[in-house]
Structures are given as structure tokens and as C-alpha cells.
Length: 307
Image (cartoon, rainbow, N blue to C red; front, side, top):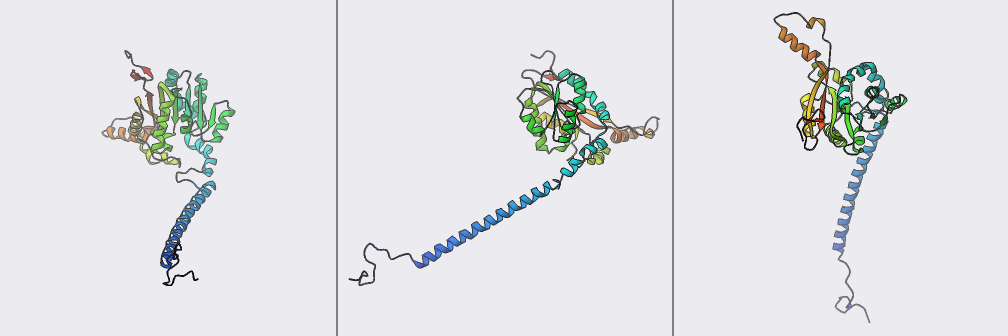
């Protein structure tokens, strides 16, 4: 007896099979989806290859757009000697901060971020102030350690974040802020505030763009500098990060030529203005203090009469 019914219908319990048109439509959708996935995968692969190429170029010494890179790093010590000044010259400038640190430093000591050649650490050691530094340059750190300085290679922000809260008396950073994007600078200030003990001080020194020679020319001698920081901006950023009693100090005036000094004439006011703008302070410092709960801080100490 035939399995096929007389009317052509399949026997009971047996399907007629898939509709050919439906199968073709399903296959077309599957091919379309596979094509889309292949295209997406190809795009992602190209993006990964592009990133790998960029990283390889960086490894070969291509800068990141801010002048940083292994070629410049290899000559940075000579660059610092040429443009930063000799260790003796730098030490003479930094010595003006010793009274602040001697007043504030105790068991927590001083942490110097971007300690470079270590002039500040040597001054503090000579003054009997416990201090250590962190710098990204292995060359500078090796030289400092050979002179008995407590220096280590590392990232300033990561090092601050690794410290216990309320553990440092003074955090200093000389000519580091101008190398940082704004977000990184704010993060550095925040991490410094956490690491400082109540009443402790963050001291930043940076080039002064109100000196027009500095703003227009000398600042750009260092290709790793980003943008000059006006004093009012740095003061605001430090206050915004919770520091109190914030103070701006102009530092290191240039020496004007003899033609712009002395003598009384009708253009004395103009002469003074030109002298100030061209030969005024080349740097400035901003000092801010971590608030003490229930106290008004003045220079790292509770104000008289505070409870």
C-alpha cells in the first residue's frame, strides 16, 4: 500500500517539509547577518592594527605631540643644564622657600614631585629636614641616589595616591604643573590634599606668563610644556580643590638693562610698566594649606584664638 494518500496529502503524522521560499528567505537573512558581522570584525581589526602601528611608532621615538619621547628624554639632562640653570643657580633660587618648610615640616617630612636633579632635596638635607622625591627620569634618580638622596622613579600622581592619608607635612612641585593637562593637575592637587596632614602645605612653582618674555618666548624653550598658567588660574584651581589660605608669590625677577633703570623723565610710568612686564618675576609660587577641622589655617598653623 502506498505511503502517499490518494489525494496527494502526506500521511498522518508526517510534515510536508519546509517551504522552499521560506528556506531561501532564512538563508538570505543569515548571509546578511554574517556579512554584517564580518564587516564589523574587519573594522575592529583595522582599528587594532592602527593602534598597534601608533604604539610601534611611539616605541621608535615618535613624540606624542608635546615633545615627549625617548630621543628628547635622552638629552633632557643636558637640556636642563642649558635652560633650567646650573645646580648652584637653581639652589640659590629654591633657598627662599626654606623658612616655610622649616616652619611646617615634622615627622611627615617633605615630598618633592618631579624632583629632577635633586637640588631641593639637597637643600632640605642640609637643613636637617626629612625629604624624599619622585621623578619620571631614571637618569636623574640614579644620579640623586648616588649622592645619597632619597629618590625613586615613578609617576607623581600614582605615588601620591599610594600614600596613607594625612601622612605628609609638605608637598612641593617645582616646574611640574605646566607639563600637565588641567584634569591631571586637578587630580594631583586632590591627591596631595589627601596625603597632607591637616595644616600641611602644597607648594607649586611654575613660569609666570605675566612676564611677557617668559610667556612669548622662554616658556616655549621646553617642548614638553603645555600652556602657561596665569597666577589667578592656579590660585583658583588650588582653592577649588579645597585648599585654604592660598597665597601667590612672584619669584625670580629678571635683571633689566641699565637703560631702563634710574633717572627721572616724563615717561617714568611707561618705563616702569615696560620694566615690570618684560623683566618682572619669571616664576611664581602658589602655596595652599589643608584645612584643619574647626580651625582657620594661617600659614600652616591655627590662627590665634581659634578653637
